[in-house]
Length: 213
Image (cartoon, rainbow, N blue to C red; front, side):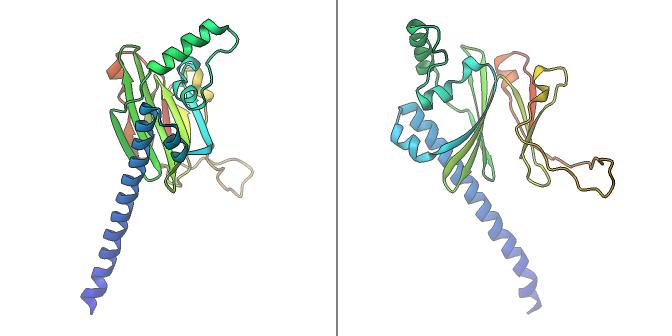
């Protein structure tokens, strides 16, 4: 009887681990299906996989917003005349999002790819909720490090204080409660999960950001 009780927590832990792994695999399949739909220009599948109120974060040169223009059909510059608009559409149609790496941590799915001809490295951090993509954080020519936040609050900060993007915060961590009127800083443990390899692949220096999930 006691052996059965002792084995019960192990069985529950094993079952929980299997559920998490299945969830991760399912989320990866959703993201992989999206890239395949984008590559084949399957608009109907894209609409099924992406929420209509998709939350979007972008870090990089505005001219590199290929994914947004691909999904919305918008031009990157509507004020420069038809010739520039046609050029932009041609560039967007030539850009292919073919991820070299796809990994997942719960609802967050990370994809990384490169365009060596343009010296471009990109990272997508997708959020998948019940089989539907609800958020995308997009990074172009940016070195990204992903960590785990103890309270699961997501935030993005610049790891290089001298960079112009130092003030980029995608979400803020909740303030710590204190009985004193003076703010207290509580150290947080953020274990390392993943790091992009873009700077090595495109052979150029990049600004750095940290994404805590």
